[in-house]
Image 1: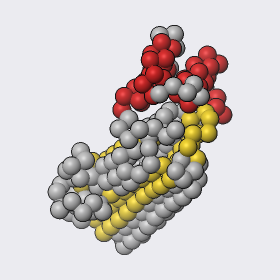
Image 2: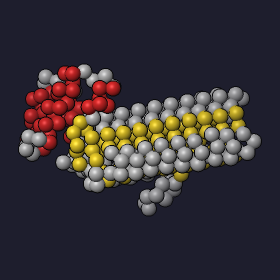
Image 3: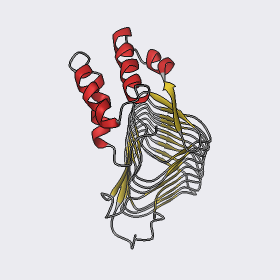
Image 4: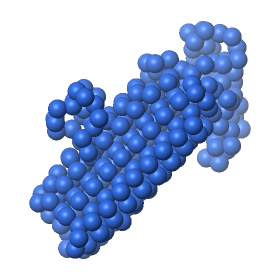
Amino acid sequence: MIDQSAFIHPSAIIEDGAIIHSDVYIGPFCIIGSQVEIGAYTILKSHIVVTGITYIGKNNQIYPFASLGEVNQDLKYIGEPTRIEIGNYNLIRESVTIHRGTIQGGEVTRIGNHNLLMVNTHIAHDCIVGNHCIMANNATLGGHVVVDDYAIIGGMTAVHQFCVIGEHVMVGGCSGVTQDVPPFIIAQGNHAKPFGLNIEGLKRRGFNRAALHAIRASYKIIYRSGKTLEEAKIELEKLAKEHQIVKIFLDFLSRSQRGIIR
């Protein structure tokens, strides 16, 4: 079904069964598969392939040579009906690739809202990317990676499969991330190590002085107190009774499976 208000360039190929909502723009030489749904006001500029069971929300802008919903690169995948879901107001730049999920990984690769995926970003199968994230040129997520809200991943950085990147994290360019990165911190290097807190980013996003003080105290407990992680959790629990924001650290540590960068 193609809404009458949508613009479809004559050179674009739209397979029967695709759902194109109102005021979508599909430019030259795009190919849209039969199980694709594209939300209102989304723009596909040109030379874009969208295939598989793929949902794209509204007001996204997708630039040339992006490939969305293609077969993933997991050798276990044998054609099961897995999918990708993309939210609203995302900028997906040139040559970005986002692969469909696997049965073993939850069946879906999901991108939230208001994200910027710069040139040649790769998001592998079963990744979950939150909202307001930035991935710079050539950044790569291995399978099953989770990226929380407001995280920034620098150019040429690779994140190992199953890692979790916490909210408001900044990972510097050319890094190799092999373990989980707790919220609010700056990470850099191969393998990535912590280099303090993303204070400037937090200030820009409206964190007040009390919250910043609690975040600094939490960082010191985890990284500078000499305590084991289990000992640090006990101290964080005490601090969380006074400062709600510390619970973000505790929740993250409870999710961590690969261990955190130290």
